[in-house]
Length: 158
Image (tube, rainbow, N blue to C red; front, side):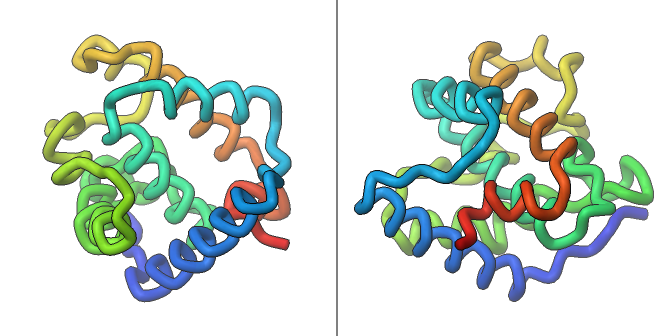
């Protein structure tokens, strides 16, 4: 069950996105995304819970690498379309953030999402920062609804 992730490709995509994001930041040129995604992003960056931002990076990578992945299902046994979000975080996202001196948690799936949860509203009851979690779900919803061109916007391509 579940879909495998190509970690080498995920590392490459993340490195490219990071370079573009840094360039956009220097040029004060944010990516063009929907108002919902922009509002959700602002709420996520106000939150003290870094794990939500890390998980969202993994969701974006999974969506970019394979549009058939259900990014709301981050545990392999959840469905045929799920993926291993924890392994993606441990093998790609968290090491990348640490290597680039970006503040991050010891591992988002260890700090917040320990159980076999899905990224859906029902999970909110087990989360402390409900506002940030809802913002993460809003962003995931926007990512799910987007076509390939729009997914690339989230990835900050030119």
